[in-house]
Image (cartoon, rainbow, N blue to C red; front, side, top):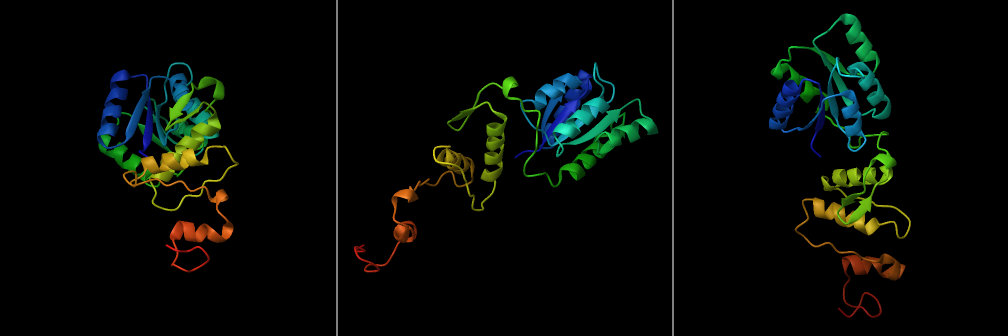
Length: 225
């Protein structure tokens, strides 16, 4: 999953410049011009890192970072401001920021900081702001949902598809385990190969191994090929 970064700044030119810089570095950057716009982004998506200006229309950057820290604890936040002071920096760190940077922004220093912060991204990003009543129904590889829980399942599918390890999918009958398995397969590096679904419940327990892995002729009654 690409590293997602949200840039929050009411200076449209600066925000656009940072977005372009980050995208060129291979990150998936998005812009919000206010704290409220940033919160709206979090109601439909999750981000690994937030770069927020202090002075924003309405809610300020420290208030935004505090809310994000409470609802999205794995998301890291950096406060960027041209109105810096030691007191502001301490307050930002107490509210959940991991770093504090003063303007003017130096691209090399910013990129070095970002690389350090996202070099070991979490496998799963908690986001308690995803709200059922604020999310339109979304389609995902043949599955349709609007609940926070299912959107988190979709995110886990994206993560699992990037791995070549065995994946165990658990759930009651009829909950869509095969759909999830197909989705992981389609998004993985093995997508060009076949996907074979086996209904093991219809196979006697003592024959499951031979059905999946084969057997020698005569190994048991009826084993003729």
